[in-house]
Amino acid sequence: MQCMIKTGEIRAKRIAEVAERLYEEKLRSKLEPRHNGEIVVIDADSGDYFLGENLHEANERARKKYPDNVFYAIKVGYPAVYSFSSRTPVSANL
Image 1 (cartoon, rainbow, N blue to C red):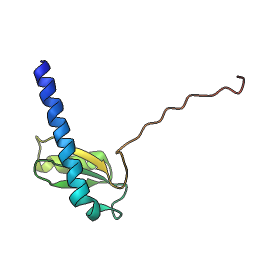
Image 2: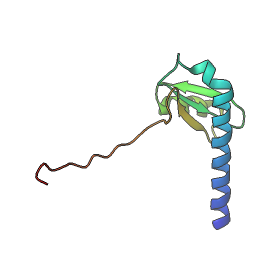
Image 3: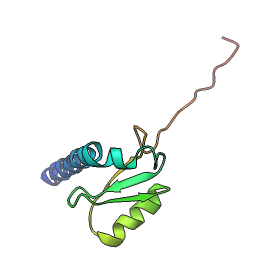
């Protein structure tokens, strides 16, 4: 079981590294700024990419061509696909 987890982690890291490199070297100049805010899903094995207005749309396009592959998603023009924030209420009666 431990070996399978390690293999999966290594594959995920490799997919991320390859996809990020493809984005930086080949896709950024093609996609920014025209497609800023859209999601690009990258197939690290083929180098193919698929655009969508949201993650679901881009992923569905990728799945039509590569139904069994694992993809990497980037929000064009942004550092992350999604971001999360947590706000803790602050009391004025400190």
